[in-house]
Amino acid sequence: MRLPSSTLVALSLVSHAHSKNSTLLNPILPGFHPDPSCISVPEPPYNHTFFCASSSFSLFPGIPLHASKDLVNWRLISNALARPEQLPALALTNKSTSGIWAPTLRHHAGVFYILTTLVFDDQPQTNLSRWDNFLLSTTDPFNSSSWSQPIHFNFTGYDTSPFWNPQDNTTYVTGSHPWELQPGITLAPLNLTTGAIGPLTNIWNGTGGLAPEGPHLYFHPPHYYLMIAEGGTGVNHMETIARAPHPNGPYTPNPSNPILTQANTTSYFQTVGHADLFQDARGQWWGCALSTRSGPEYAVYPMGRETVLAPVTWETGGWPVWSNVSGHVSSWPLPAQNVITEGEGPLITAAELLDFAPGTRLPPQLVHWRLPIADNYVVSPPNHAHTLQLTASVLNLTGLDGNYAGPAGQTFVGRRQVDTFFTYSVDLDFSDLREEGDEAGVSLFLTQNHHFDLGVVLLPAPNTNLSTQYPSSSPPAPPLTPHLRLRGISYLPVPPALTIPLSTFFNQTLPHPSKTLTLQIKASNTTHYALSAGPPGHEHLLQTVGWTPAAAVSFGFTGTLCGVFATTNGRVVNGSAPSALRAWVGGWRYEGQGQVRS
Ligand SMILES: *[C@@H]1O[C@H](CO)[C@@H](O)[C@H](O)[C@H]1NC(C)=O
Ligand SMILES: *[C@@H]1O[C@H](CO)[C@@H](O)[C@H](O)[C@H]1NC(C)=O
Ligand SMILES: *[C@@H]1O[C@H](CO)[C@@H](O)[C@H](O)[C@H]1NC(C)=O
Ligand SMILES: *[C@@H]1O[C@H](CO)[C@@H](O)[C@H](O)[C@H]1NC(C)=O
Ligand SMILES: *[C@@H]1O[C@H](CO)[C@@H](O)[C@H](O)[C@H]1NC(C)=O
Ligand SMILES: *[C@@H]1O[C@H](CO)[C@@H](O)[C@H](O)[C@H]1NC(C)=O
Ligand SMILES: *[C@@H]1O[C@H](CO)[C@@H](O)[C@H](O)[C@H]1NC(C)=O
Ligand SMILES: *[C@@H]1O[C@H](CO)[C@@H](O)[C@H](O)[C@H]1NC(C)=O
Ligand SMILES: *[C@@H]1O[C@H](CO)[C@@H](O)[C@H](O)[C@H]1NC(C)=O
Ligand SMILES: *[C@@H]1O[C@H](CO)[C@@H](O)[C@H](O)[C@H]1NC(C)=O
Ligand SMILES: *[C@@H]1O[C@H](CO)[C@@H](O)[C@H](O)[C@H]1NC(C)=O
Ligand SMILES: *[C@@H]1O[C@H](CO)[C@@H](O)[C@H](O)[C@H]1NC(C)=O
Image (cartoon, rainbow, N blue to C red; front, side, top):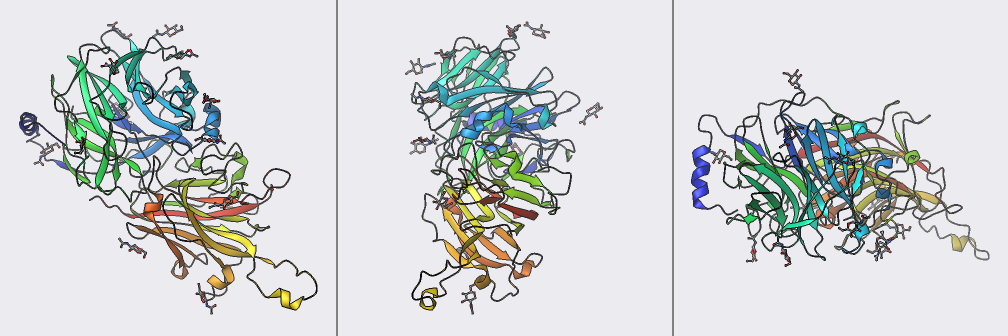
């Protein structure tokens, strides 16, 4: 980050000499929480509660909302996109870079608004159908079901963000114009009730970096400030700013741009950008942004783009000055510790133990890849209390072509990896596998083209030399027997698939599990995951099946999930999945065991 020496002096003058600095730990929203937009809501009943929304791409439920009173403890309070009928087209996204991009969260006159874009990233940039912009609203952000149906509006582009001009009460939308057209930031009046949009004005093109995007407008009297991201969301990412006497311009860029970047640094926190600004109860400014814990090598970052926070100085008539983003930031005093209790989900780094009790539903931190087929997920079914019953999809986690699955979907439910080191395990009842290729198991999933699966799959027993026993007739088909299979797919080379009959794998821990198995994914060091299996209830008897490289699940826009899947690997009966193939998952555990912050 470059700061002119004059601003450095100003910064040190205002650094609250009377109160002790705090140490802020980043990321504040670890794991797959990119493109953050955060606000502080001073009004009762929120009393300076902080709220953040982040991108969810093809996940459902989508657009998670986290809240905090102290900027340290963040709770998942709702998902703004929690009903399939809000966005049926989310079932049809093609490519892992499609889906929900960059929600902007704002609170105005008692209402919470989210503006965002459903992007069909397989379409050419110039195709108007590529960009489905819409807004959601609620007066109760702690309740997923309170979020409205979308109001769609016609904006050719993405990263839309609302702005209420307090000087004339006009409501605007700013957004990014696609880069294959004329890249730049556009502004238009927008009616938030009807979605009617006024004439588009190209207000700023940024400082010349790739893909000017993620615009947010602020009125910090006497100026209007337009802060944007440039450089693309990789290691050249940066945040720049310009200001104007009116939202329409003309905009004067900050001579000190970029105001935030880790480009060309050796920081562990790279790709910093796509930022937002807000003020706490003391009037101190803060900025959130996305960042990737990758170091400049930018090769191992399975959790993808996470949300970070930094103190910002912004004096009247001046420019916002960001502190450097790192794992341990010396910051303004943080608000007093205060753990928020409202909302539907857990604190973001809470250990998780799910026993799928009768009468419960899947908690809001569990996600599907695209819209789920609801019947494929039954909590605590008859005869299998305290399990989650999965009904297999025909498609496995790679799906049709690694990019698409179609409306029949993929049976998968997972949660975000939010710790550098963690252990995730489930007890899997695989007794319903029937035909060759039927499979259920755990997955470390980044995209359809990047995942490692440890499953139990039904395959013919190893060759028992039947042909010599039956020399004159065709041999009977070898019996099917459950095998452990660890296989993966990535754009990088992956270890060869490992397939081994359960009876062979467990030769040292007899009796080998015949019905239920514990399957575990563990990030045991920063570069590899260990995938293990063993008899349930005996963690010390788990044996490692194999190690998979974290670099092979470091790619693109999403972040890793740990979850469970069930598939017939393509086997169809009368054109669809054999309806009865099920697997039962119990004892779902996720526990963080440490963060690497530098
Ligand atoms: C906010 O403050 C009001 C008035 O002091 C109080 O009644 C209310 O319980 C507070 N709400 C929260 C969420 O702290
Ligand atoms: C997905 O998009 C690709 C272009 O990126 C296209 O070739 C393919 O046909 C699409 N698949 C489906 C099923 O629409
Ligand atoms: C534009 O996108 C729509 C919706 O995905 C698609 O049906 C149409 O074929 C696309 N048009 C072109 C010219 O690519
Ligand atoms: C959407 O806006 C574009 C201009 O930005 C215009 O060309 C197009 O006709 C509009 N579409 C509709 C359905 O109004
Ligand atoms: C803007 O709207 C508010 C609330 O409706 C009103 O009090 C205020 O006078 C309006 N300001 C202007 C400049 O119109
Ligand atoms: C939005 O449109 C509706 C319907 O045309 C109108 O009644 C309302 O006044 C508009 N709102 C604003 C802020 O212009
Ligand atoms: C953005 O770039 C285009 C193409 O160079 C130019 O026509 C337009 O005036 C620029 N917009 C602004 C606000 O400078
Ligand atoms: C990083 O360094 C490259 C090469 O010198 C330069 O082109 C680029 O502008 C720098 N990026 C930033 C944000 O300073
Ligand atoms: C206290 O925090 C502010 C804001 O990050 C920073 O500018 C200042 O240097 C810090 N002071 C110390 C003594 O670390
Ligand atoms: C026992 O299983 C391991 C693999 O888990 C295998 O390498 C070994 O050969 C097996 N031993 C016997 C006696 O089958
Ligand atoms: C992590 O563990 C794997 C498997 O044991 C090993 O190959 C790799 O070198 C280890 N990496 C580090 C950074 O220790
Ligand atoms: C997925 O299933 C297809 C058949 O639908 C199969 O060809 C492919 O090998 C499977 N692979 C993986 C890694 O899931």
